[in-house]
Image (cartoon, rainbow, N blue to C red; front, side, top):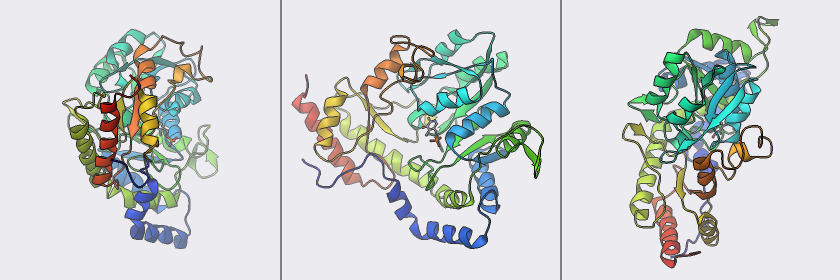
Length: 375
Ligand SMILES: *Cc1c(COP(=O)(O)O)cnc(C)c1O
């Protein structure tokens, strides 16, 4: 079977079109209102999103990277500290740790879930370790119970990278409500995406919230008076208003992702590919539907030939990227991460994707598998 129309891997425009009337109204309201930065829309969205996550405070900021940077700094992480995280992630995770002044210490992943391996964390702790940054990659929560049982007795801070896990849960509690603080991105393709950049720090700790609030706007407690040295990372009113519309649809959007992921899983069960796994305690929100195979490049080319878009998240682990190689690792230092980088492939998945498109993609994958391509 061939796919007639091009199927993109992600489609943020489809999300806009699905909620167009509401979004256009929200934009018009902001334009007419005359407040464009840190006004009533941002304040309302901060409260609504923090309540959704199940914590007391939300601080809207400029991006997911800045949310991580601010959260780490607000938790007291800085120069001289070591922060344990993963290499198999968006480079932003590691960039944010370096922005805080701390040294990233990258450990391997649990290959079943592509998330931070608690045993690796234990082995990487030194007297300089002050924090752990688990990444809930692809929408699957990291093993928060094990990670907290390592962090709490040692007084380590835990800052969750929730850029791919809006709505995901572990043992009935949402990602973002487990650590001392968490960072969300609202980049357009994320499970909760705006129409531009945006991010949020969420926390239940009033002190962390207060510091993050100061840092995002020049350290101001009172206008024009800097209580601490800060900088500028603010969520704008347009994005906040758009995100309030999208938040109301987040659970149904995640439900659509889960239903499509279930369809892929059923169709691809016999294809011989590695399919995404979900731990018993986890609610996976499928930011991405990631399969794995050593012949990934061949499968990717086969699908491209039929107009099917795929993605690779991510092709080079952070410790082997030119900016970090030698400093944060070398070839062979994180075998599971390096294998994942060579094998993962993200199939088309977004809430507006039609089930018949998923059937067509699955059929194309099965045809490739039957052909035994590349073997
Ligand atoms: C997208 C993403 C970020 C960064 O978010 P931006 O809003 O692009 O700065 C950080 N971590 C992960 C895991 C991401 O996917």
